[in-house]
Image (spheres, one colour):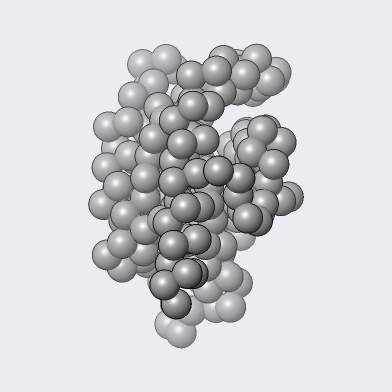
Length: 186
């Protein structure tokens, strides 16, 4: 089934440094996904620019826009560097702002950047369960990237895409069919 509209891709980056290498990796992955899935230009959310707004009430319009962009995405890249053998507290604080099923209908792709191959499972063990708890579908393995790979990320993303393409296309297509059925029911 062909999508009625181009897929919407958003990348949320939980690195506490503005303009980080993790942001660059997320932008690269989101761009690759957009090209493969015939999507619109990806939306990038650098949480480092919103860090001071995460625990302030009322929420800022920028933070609300970031939350809406992530929840409204067809494909959500959730990127983090490894921090103390897990994902960052900044990313956790952002994700904690969603209620139950706040990411329902979203297909999530975890992206983890680390200095050591020993942290290859951080996305699977720590990040995936949180995304699933929020209602997201996570049909692929985490894309784990070593710092050394950031010099030329293309081959790493290409290898990951070879395994991820089929489940990702299925998940995005299924999401599109559900949205179409909901529109008909309205």
